[in-house]
Length: 380
Ligand SMILES: [Zn+2]
Image (cartoon, rainbow, N blue to C red; front, side):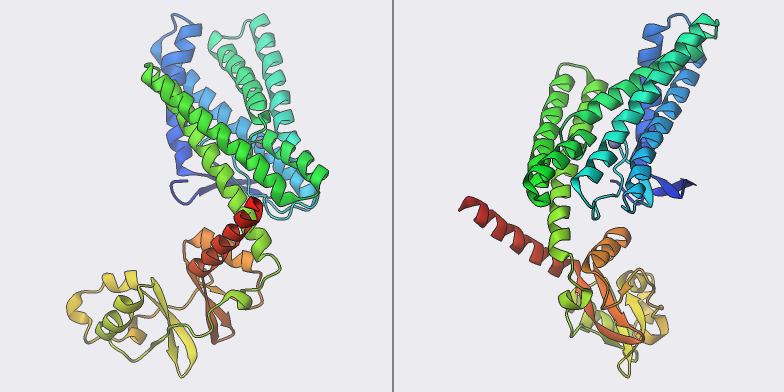
């Protein structure tokens, strides 16, 4: 959401990544537990005890969400849906599993197992905290366990709300999908409910904030924003997938890309290429063979006085796999690579030969054209 996720560890072959927004969230949770919830329910403990409880509560929340997401991933794997990584976002994880869910039953099973696992966790923490109370464990421990049991129950119920991309929305989508046999229509309906629900939470958050409940209001506001944008982008993703599916990179590439000769100076490069085309990276050719890539941000680091004397060939770097793709690859793979690396233009390379360039701009233009056509059809 705010940047590239950081890898934490791998479990059952799934890479667990954390979005930077999550660290912010962890701090917010620890603080609101230590200064709000725990002192209210468990009075007269030393302040340091509340902070330890807050930290334990935040770690417990983190682990609970990982377990919830892991069960999604494990069931997805059983249905042959690849889900290599789990990224923890502001509220729970949005597991990357859009790609090719085979049938409604798979979608249903993948979705339902999350709330079920939260339910089981909630019950387990409930039993454990009861056991703790009976066995005379310190109130700091039973308090955290009690909190975690409630938290998991709330996670289960919240995720069952039929607002896509929440699990409940996925369950709804699977039912609509089974009924109408149309994944795109089902996604559209579920995503519209999700988007509306997100807006509702955002408004609720604003009302809370206006009434003086700042932290609670901020929570709902952020969660609402997150759900709304996730719902909208997931519909666009489905549309993009169905549009680019079965299309190859070579079908969408531009075959006469702008290339830079090795021998020109940096000054000429800036004047004749950068100011003219405004791209971030350019392929460098020598006798029509691709010899490297030159990036605009590289040049910015070189003192201006050296621009006249230095050539493009001297500063060009090898074109790595973040910026190149084969002509026979699936167009969706190009989109995923752009998404992951932030490079909006990829060189289509066959061995040492540059066959063309595929750009996000062209792909999006095609997508928005397709969406407009869809809307026209809808309004007929
Ligand atoms: Zn879930």
